[in-house]
Length: 389
Image 1 (cartoon, rainbow, N blue to C red):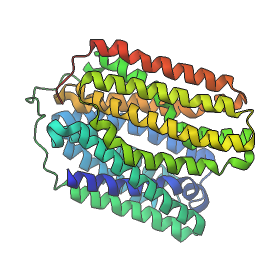
Image 2: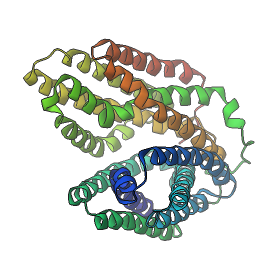
Image 3: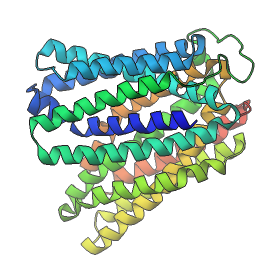
Image 4: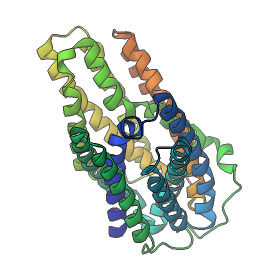
């Protein structure tokens, strides 16, 4: 797993760097209009979802390592094109290639971990998530440096660095030792759409997807809410991101280690969802708080929210293995990822509505909805036939 951890970390640094600078690179350096950039990003998201579904099936039938490596190579081609994407056609092609590469990597990642780690898949994924979080943070920090420089050459250098990380990871992936069949005996994967008829799994996936709106609270809703209620405290949004990252790196592996059964995973998911919902109540209070109290409330929020996120992730990561047949991990992971992708696309609109309300009602409704959704996993959990992990 050491090699897979290195691949995860290197890839995360490149992705964090690119995510930080991409919007301004597209508009300021390449000179494309905001409407074109938005259209290309939307098309890339659709391409990623399609590749995710197809890649999940291929990961189960052909092998996750091959699909993951193919995703890295396609991403490499996309970044190569992005270096010279001043023309609209090249920019569209680069965006679509990047989307397809992302989708192939997403669908094969969980299946790759399950086959490579075997009985230690849950803890291996927790460890890799820690490397992912740290890598994204380092990449984001480097991206902030690029934004500070602001020169076109700095943006081009950042894209080239991301390109090199894809190349390096593709070469490293070739050295991964991955069993040819899952640990549970290598039964033939079910048909392409079998996963969507698995009502137990789909219920869990839908519940998890709805709750995943929380992933946009820190980077999107917190800065906006501070700007609306306490404009002098918008800098606290950056502090909140740092605290969240540090707590995730320090505690995620420990939290996953405490989950050692299907029931434990369900309870961890429940506790995490309820805790995240409770953290939203801070914003309902903050709307009328003084400046000093608001500072304390934001810091309290990020600690409570981060602990909830860690518990929720521990339960969700475990359940994604325990409720899925090993021979179909790729397809199930692709379906799970697709639902979360749709939720992610809708999240800014949902949270924007909460912030635009300007009062406590929106946060109270969001808190109640999150808690009720988390409780639904108890009903679903009773019907699961947990797989050994």
